[in-house]
Image (cartoon, rainbow, N blue to C red; front, side, top):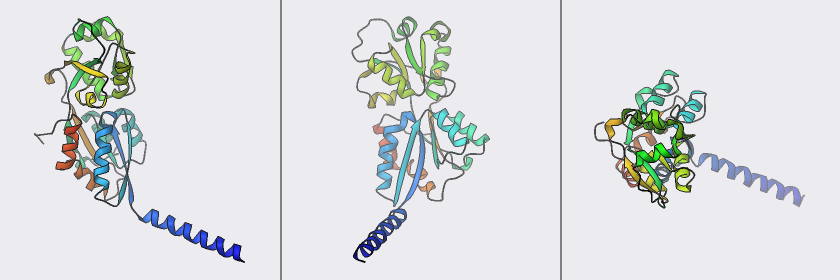
Length: 251
């Protein structure tokens, strides 16, 4: 009898704890472009301090994440590194088009390892040795890179040297380790990888405007819109600037 009583009490406490855990806050699943990883992590922590909720963050190449959302992944907010994948999800009827917000802008650069001491220009470097860029067929950073290089008249000359990666952070890491001579990445990436330095910045008119857009998916619960609004709050925008993103001034 004592054993059964102890077991009963233990089970009662366990299920009580589980119930409280379930009621203690809602989970909000956010899919975000890899280049926003650290910034969105800090924004999520800031938001969680104001709500009874838990942000579950999944980061990766924008194209890969967009396809997952289109196939029914449980994301409630999608943060894209360009407009193309947002338009794709509108066509797939996977996001709420009226909820779309531009939350930040970025710039495109060529980065090399800090130990690099060559005298060649950045574009010469791309033409002479292997360099990394994100896959232009699915990742915005890669598409911006190819667009800029084509406008400079360089892409056809150097494309055989390009190592295409799953997302921009992998390209960044390859340059940092010295696996490639350089990588075409975002200016914001420099703030999270101390082993690289900028050697060239593409003029903004060489490629489409680099805008980050956030939207609610069609399965988002009602409270998800509060986090979406928070992304454009003064606090969240300050965090984005801290991580090298620029404030959007022409919304």
